[in-house]
Image (cartoon, rainbow, N blue to C red):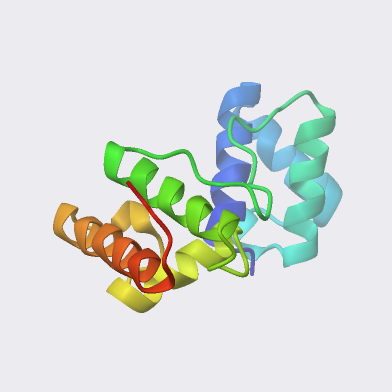
Length: 141
């Protein structure tokens, strides 16, 4: 069974390509012999998404590349990223990737991404990074 994300992509592509229910069902029957995307295998769902791409559909948001930082949604997130990179430049943080930063956030807050943290939790992360820098002798002004 395809993931929710794949099912969402399929239905978004169907809508953005302007496919009627009839045309969509024809594609499903022709290519996979099934009436519903939920009944597809993971591989079939991937092939259907690629077929929609070949018809001209372009997803609006691509999956984030590993190591590329998330775009901060507020000033606190920007500050967290800046502190993390300063600590990395000073050699305190060994892995400066976004994945490592999010793992640090997860250890601090039990949330999988800093985007889901409250203002207070983000402030705790900022203060923890400042304290870490102070312990290591890094000036984070």
